[in-house]
Image (cartoon, rainbow, N blue to C red; front, side):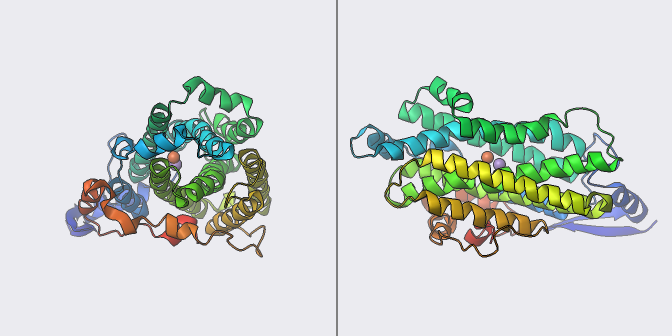
Length: 366
Ligand code: FE
Ligand code: MN
C-alpha cells in the first residue's frame, strides 16, 4: 500500500494513495459524492479552504467599534438631511439584504454543492452575513433609529423592494429537489451563484458602500464607516467564493456555457445595474458635498464590468473609468491594523497559511 503526503499550509497528512485518489475523484462542485461526514481530505478545491482561513483571520465584532462620535453627529445640527438619509438607506437596505444572502447560502447553494470544503467556506460565509446583520442592529440601537421604520423600508421604498425581489425570485425557484443532471437546472444554479455573488454582493452593494465611505472620508460617521469597511472586506471574499464556485461549476459542466446562457447573464447584469442606478438616485435625491449621483452611476458601470470580466463574460461599458480612485485608499485596511488595539489582528496571527490581507485593488475588483 503506497502512501502520499498531502500538504495544507504547514500541515502534513499521510494518505493512502488509492483511497485519496478515489476521494479526490468523487469530489465535484455538484453531483459529487454526497456525504455527511465532512471528509475534507484530500482537498480538491484549495481556494475554498484558503478563503475560509482568510475569512476567519478577518473576524470582527461590531461592539468593538466605538460609536460615540457617530451618536454625537447624529444628534447634532451639523448634518445635512441627505447625509442622515444615506445612513438610513444603508441600514434599511442592508438589514434586508444580509438576511437574503445568508438564507440563499444555507437553503440553496450549500445544499446543492457536494464537496465538503465548499460547504465549509459557505458555512463561514453565512456566518459573516449574521455578523453584518448584527452590526446593523448595533447601528440602529446606537443611533436610536426606530427598528420598525427600518423594516418598513423593505416594502415601502420601491427601489429597495425591487432590488430584493430581483434576488429572492431566483432563490425561491431553487428551493426544491432539483435534478442537477439536467442542463437547465444546472443553469438555474449557475445563474443563482452569478446573481448573488456578482450582481448583488458584487455590484448592488457598491452604491451604498461608496456613499457611506465618502461620508467616512469626510470624517462623518466614523464608527459606521469602519463597520462598512470591515463589511466590504468580507464581501470581497464572498464575491471571490462565488466567482470561483461559478467558474469551477462551469468548467466541470461544459453544457452550462451556451451562448444563450451567456447572453442571459449579461442581460441579468444589465437589469441589476439599472436597479442599482435607480436606487442610487433614491439615496441621493440631491447632490451632497462630494457626492454626485452621476459619479455613482458611473462607478456602478465600472464595478459591474469588473464582475463580468471576473467570470469570463464580455463587459457592458468598456470605456468607463473608475470615478472614485480614492476609494481604494479608504478601504485599505492594512494601514490601521491596530484599530482594535490588537484584537482583530490577533486573529491574523492564527492563520497558518500565510495569506496576506486582501488588497484595496482586490476589494474593488480591479
Ligand atoms: Fe454581508
Ligand atoms: Mn456577503
